[in-house]
Image (cartoon, rainbow, N blue to C red; front, side, top):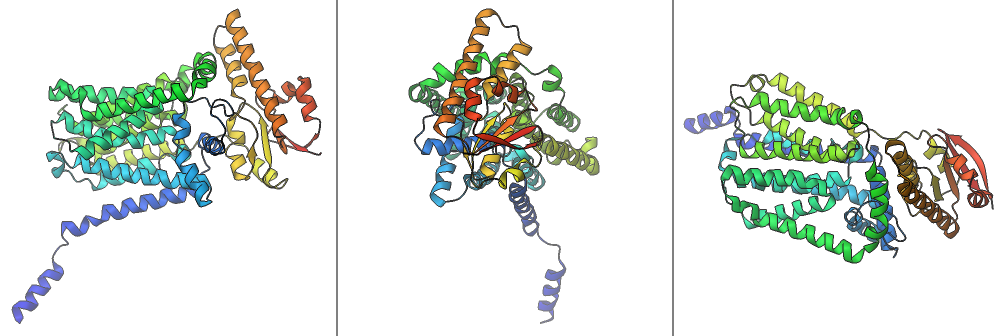
Length: 505
């Protein structure tokens, strides 16, 4: 009896087993997802995501993309949200909530698949994955802030399992069929969004072949699957949406793609700073100079996404999300799991924590930038329930997600009058010859015709005229046909330089 009591006491006072402590990371990851869910209730819906939900709703109503709906991006942009829009309509739930739920589930699935693939490496058994897993969850769910749900956010999530497979390939570790399929589909989806995303995939594939000295890896099955997906999407676009090549792409080529932001905007920003800090962290923690397979592909992927960000020549936060996310993941991995035991940063946990917290705070600020429209939503909400809304402006953030918040109907076939805005920028920042100038005038006339046709087809209840940017009020008053269409409207109020016109007839 005495021996049984002694055994019970020893069991009670013995240190907790590692298995019991292993629950803590899962609980903290759950807390990260709870915070991410709460943020979706307070952070406004992204402008472009809001517009693409409108696009999806119109497509379900039978309208034709690039005919009845003018979208600057290839069809993949619209189709990425179409299942969520359809599910929202079936459930009688606002599609924004369905998209939020789908993205959080995709984030969870991506992290779980990536973790399971990484664990196939023999070296992973020596790594304490808990802190890094918590960090990774925060990077893909909380860090995006206002760019949550953007195509770049989706593309990053679908790319991660492929990144893990590339790491295994570089170590000559066998990859099971399920991981090959998940990686191939994920990378294929990423590449289908933008051709710029070819760089990170290509860098990782080439590095794996070089490091393992197996050139046949260039034809690994996940690469073939990804290539087939890109080919199918491209062929489908050509066959099903010829107007993208005959109408939309020439517009984009001659306006949007013809100019660039200044080098200071493109390169001197928070995204570049975070990227540099991440690479510096790797250098300081890997004194031996050799990177393990996962750290190698993470560094190369962040560099590849950085190239894609800079080549887009805009410096916009959402374009930088894949670059920043991979840089942050790389930094977290270097500081939390992969540092050399003798490195100064590894020995100084407080320094590592300070670097990570500061970087994350800067990233939150960078990705939460948005256009301020003041009390405009509150003013419009008092005028008319569920209004038909038209905005005369080149700034998309005025109308989106405003029209969704009001439960209204968007009148224009465009997200905003982007052609006039891009033509202005093209003329300001490039040299335009007579032939190019004639094409630009033709595009302006085409957009004007679209606007008038949309106005007549579905007369708006409210018209917002942006006088703060590029003189839209003067432009409308100078056009006799637009003036005639605006005659039944009266000025209600001007908010933040935006005239609110209400229909009186």
